[in-house]
Amino acid sequence: MKRFYVLFLFALILSSCVFTKNKIVTDEKKHEKILIGDVNRKSFLKDEFKTWFEKNYSSYNPDKEVIDLLGNSDLYKDINIKIIFGTWCGDSRRELPRFFRIVDAAHIPENIISLTAVDTKKSSRNKSLDGISFTRIPVFIFYRNGEETGRIVESPRESLEKDILNILNK
Image (cartoon, rainbow, N blue to C red; front, side, top):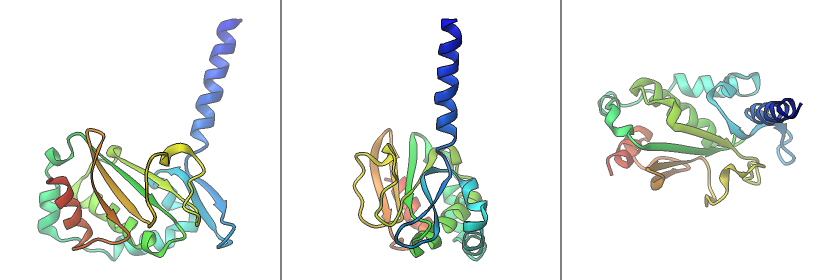
């Protein structure tokens, strides 16, 4: 009987973790549906976000020479990328689809990318942003072996793909 309760408790915890991804809420300030908390790329296929995501994804043409350099899988050894964004934010709506266009073109492994959506108060309503300081979004934070190596904040300095390459080459 004890084994049953342990399995039940484990299943309950696991199911609660599954349902916290890709959560959509209505933002108090903007009065529109937004993503909140930890999400994955599939969330951008939902009707609320699909139009702007697909438009900005398909209209972006990254620099082919830089994409070829980003295609070197050795660049991603021990790398993790944390992206903090808001689906209500114009800069996020522009840069996030462009980022995934680069990911697809350069075959960047998606398992090194984590996405956290914030509300207009820049809160994710969970603990995934504890210890991370930011004031503007989107912010792309690059980690090597758990240590931060660089950020792209709000908009790139040169181009998104060039800024990514510069950080990865540090």
